[in-house]
Length: 437
Image (cartoon, rainbow, N blue to C red):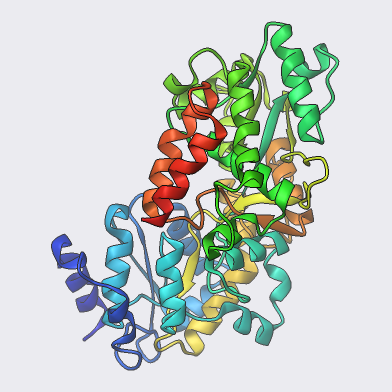
């Protein structure tokens, strides 16, 4: 079957047929078939309709830095809706129909299935063979390995987001506050700001996850970067006293009113607006917010007035503030089936050039080392890029290793920590019980 026919068949598959595909299908056809570019003269890419940054960058590469690779195997992109992404990938993997290059599975558990079934390329091995290991930044490598539970990487960090506390420089300076380096300092700063009539933190209690991120990061700083891996392994529970302590610390901020009067009524856009209009001093958020920070129509305090501080250390804790909370957005993977010389050439070219091109053209910070940063890079973007380049390792977010049910319960109850209606113990019990299901 040729590549064009295969793509048409993929697009015609009814959504209902996707729901019954499971892990067994991934190992049913370990050899043969597939849509590899070996001998086909094409290099297929499959992405989500909603994300155009990756495919646009690949198209740019195909006409410039990767033109020789494109001449040998022409970039042939396709896309499907993100709403059925994982189900589609499961079906394609079971038929050995994965594209040469595609966005990776959305859930870590499914990506682990692909890795265990030998469906995706061990990128670490390929990079080592080409002497390109240094093109993946240590923090990005650490994030991907932790996400998939491996010692090698099987996906590329075409996007890399760090998280931490963004702060309003003027508000802190006017109140004699220096950026906090410890949790105790952060709490003291919040008390000082509230006493001065300034809302300390802006956060979306409606979304919930900006609050649960704080719980997870406190755990990493207090108990160490493996704190939530122990929960996933069953050697620890979220209801253990040392884990409840983290949720209690966040709940104490909520009880003190540091998130405002009605945080559960605040959605993501409103929380962003509160910070960018100078109505809150601190804003815990990921670097994907740079788009808004660098937009003068949204950012009324000015990009030069925004600072960044990592999630602070906890006194006596086993973790460190240089272990940056991070995620890789939507990473990308290579199918192992028919992975030949043309695919290897494309892999080498993408790793060598993607980071520079996506930063220049789209302002997206990736997990690749940058050779030629744009001269006009916004200060906030450069700050993020420097933080990523200097971070020795990373930690995941609170729900990264949890079941879908536990993730939903966690994020739907995160707002309760911000408005004081849930204690840390109550919150952790809810999530722990859901994670058993």
